[in-house]
Length: 445
Image (cartoon, rainbow, N blue to C red; front, side, top):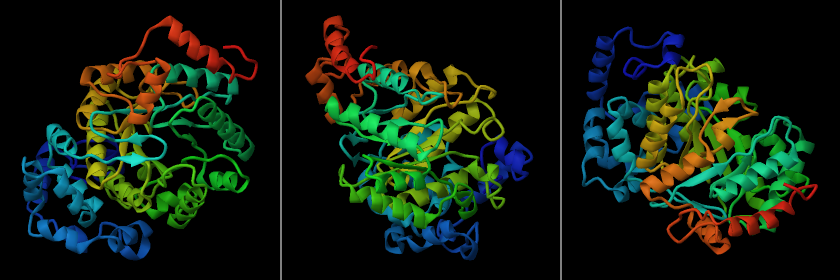
């Protein structure tokens, strides 16, 4: 599996990558001839030592797998690429596929193959807004601040809303993961959403146990966030296990604030190696296993923070692009509502042109949502992502609208027309800002 992967620095760092392109092609040829069913019986990480393996195996639907059980990995690739293989068939097939099967077939696919298959798939989730419908593209509004300054967070949120961002979620990464700070941020976001009647949802991306405690304190929690990984050992390093995630989901659903899908997960290739929980398995396969964890909880949102961990794992723009397309394909095949934080760290061999390319490719592939960061520069997390303006570029270029409910809200306020295009009327924007300014602690913007 590792030697068949396209080159990436994390596998080289782990000492498991192919030593040459010839060795990589030889491994891919061997991979193509493997029976697809072998991944249901031979486990890369033993069943006895890893709860992620157990969860994947115990939830595997043998009946759903039967239509493709006779195929090799290479034949499965050809089957997926056939025009007659529709999303309706893939819906039925999904419970019979394991993450390892999808990781294997992705290693045989060109970028255009990953895009072509993923573009067939529609995964729609609902809380207050509906995310994932074809013809629509949602954006997570990410108004992070290095000191969690409330005024600055509100100002950035208002800015993003004017650009049509925030329909996926308004989500803050807190600078400090304390219960008191989380409570303050949750109440701020709830006040913004309720005061302006915005059809969206909020999330403060602190540790899941703090979010459970916030719920116990009566805080207005919409989505419950947690970073997850593809091995039990790595999840333990995050301070979580499957039982804690189930507890969190039950707590979130008990509030009945939305339509039932309350979990928000983030992942990223290289996390297991970084935590020394990789078991000598390649990082892309482990990433796919994280999606096996995610689908146990019927999440509202999932995204790969594809270039965030750094060049030790994805060295340059080419590796980041390939990883993003792989991640999106594998997650969508498992029927997950997949988005992507198209991003890179400042010491990676990548730039914003690489992010433009990946964002465009993923949008063509039907990615559910991207990030909206002021100026594309997250001043709290210190990495480069995609901006409010980037969201407008991709929506206008590919004729995509915001989430339906959010689109109607913007039209009602005069912030966009019925084609999803932004209004640049200073009078209408001024009216919106007059209303929004009242949300600020001191009443000024």
